[in-house]
Length: 123
Image 1 (spheres, rainbow, N blue to C red):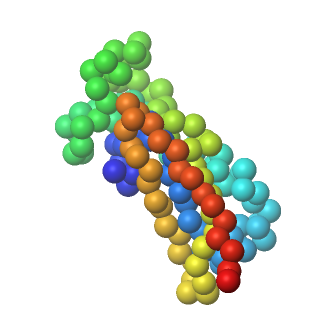
Image 2 (cartoon, helix red, strand yellow):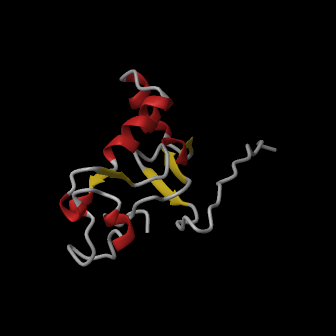
């Protein structure tokens, strides 16, 4: 669901960065907050690109489209996630290269969920 180009309004999603990715980002001066904000801003689409039936997928509901004065022609940006804070960042993995994984939470607004993280100590 999270990878679908018309999925919007999603809740908590874990972004699992490899150590090498994090090293590259840190060397370029990117903070955790900047990475989160950058991704949240770039993962917005105009209403006109989220129409039902166009390019596959359900798209925005009639009720949602009606909320925009220009309706289906609107250039208003709709975010993929409910808020920047829904993007949970963590580091995991080894030295295999620059891999990042996306782990979605429960995708439905009617049944919101929150990801829970707990640090695991080595034995």
